[in-house]
Length: 253
Ligand SMILES: C[S@@+](CC[C@H](N)C(=O)[O-])C[C@H]1O[C@@H](n2cnc3c(N)ncnc32)[C@H](O)[C@@H]1O
Image 1 (cartoon, helix red, strand yellow):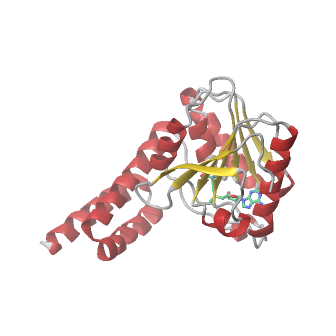
Image 2 (tube, protein in one colour):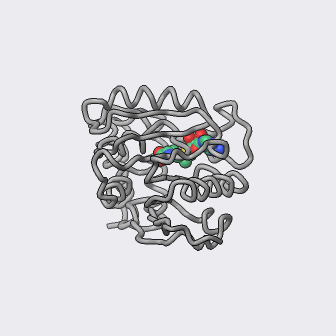
Image 3 (cartoon, protein in one colour):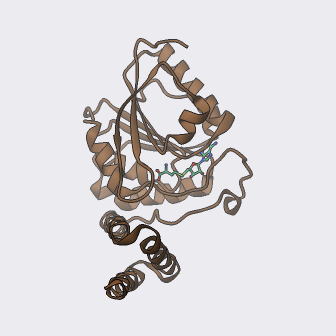
C-alpha cells in the first residue's frame, strides 16, 4: 500500500515537473517525497493541492512570481532583511476576501513586495490604490512587469512600486491595509511599526494589518496595546495569516 502511495506521489511530482520547469519542479518533487515521509499521506496531499493552486493562479494571471531569491543574489547586504519568497495564493485569497474592501476607499500597502504577487492579487479587488515597497530595484522591475501582464484581471488600476528601505518609508495617510510576509526583523521591523503608529496618530483612521507568520512581530515588536488580533487563517502549506486591527483612537503605549 505504502509503495503504491509513493508511486502515485512520484507520478504527480513528474506531472508537476512537466508543467512548471525542470529545476523548479525537481525541487518540488523532492520536497513532496520528503513531506510524505515526514507528514504522511495527508501532508503530501495538502502539499500537492498547494502546488496545484500555485500553478493555477500563475497561469491564470499570466505572471511569474514563483521561486525564492536570496538578498545576496540581489547584491543587497542587510542582516535584518528576509529573502524573496512569495505568499501562497490559497491563503492570500482567503485573507483578501475577508477584508471586505471598500470600493475606491481602501488603499493597500505591501511592505517588502518582491516580485509583486501580493500586489497583483490585492489589485484583483477594488482597492483605490495598491502600493508595493521593496528595497530591490530589480524585484520592483519584475513586479511592474507582472502587473502589466495581469492588467486584464485587475480591478484596481492605480498601482505604484516604491524602491526604498521600508524603515525610511513614510506611510501615506490614505493607507488602510498593510501587509507583511516575513520581510524584515529587528530594528527595521520596530522602526516600521513606529512609523505606522505615527501615521495613525497624525491621521486617525481604521487600519488593518495582515501578517503572514507574525512570529517576529510578536517576538520583537512585542505586545502592542494598539493592535488587536481579529482572526487567523491557516493555509494549505506554510505559515498562517493573522489579521490585526489598529484600535482607533490609538491606545498609546
Ligand atoms: C518574503 S518576501 C515577501 C514578498 C511579497 N510580500 C509576497 O507576499 O509575495 C520579503 C520581501 O521583503 C523585501 N525586503 C526585505 N527587507 C526589506 C527592507 N528593509 N525594505 C524593503 N523591502 C525589504 C525583500 O526584498 C523581499 O522581496
